[in-house]
Image (cartoon, rainbow, N blue to C red; front, side):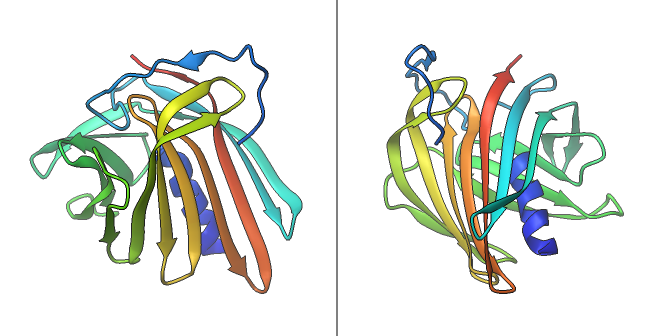
Amino acid sequence: MKRFLISLTLLLIVFTFTACSDNDSPVVPNNDPLVLTPLKVGNWWRMHTVVDRDGVPFYESTDTVRIDTSFAWGGFVWFGSSGSNYFQRNNIDGLWTLYLYPSGDSGRVELTYKYPVTVGESWTTQPDTIIYNVESIEKTVVTPNATYLNCIQYNSIVTTSNEMNIEYFKPGVGKILSNSIIEISGNLVRAKIEIISYHLE
């Protein structure tokens, strides 16, 4: 359970999130931005999380993920939240993640989400051996705040725990919806995180 809650926390931080909505919800413009998740101090995403065990809800929260710090490390500028050891940056090949060790002078860097991508593209990250696969680049996702067109669907599995994730990103906005499932002590635990609102500087 501890590993799943850590993974759930990371999903919130990564933004970097289908519920029904009425037809009056705004449609996010269909553009072709250069980045998957815009990273700038002052950006924030308000997310709603629901976790259930064997279909019975046992955890629910609404949290705001804010970018309030940036710093240079390894020759690049990274963005994240104060007090976190988890930071991100955009590159021409996608969204990179830095896991900074407590000492602050060493860390692990990985290309977490490739972008741009093509359907069927796959890759693996270490050391948890997470296998990613691009299922779609044209998904329409409806959330409480808007309808998002041409979203990218990333499917992944953590081979060390058999945790499965389906994540939807709207390029230029960030992660808007994620669904995770894992078996813990014989119980099927599901988590759903979806965007409620956001602000980009």
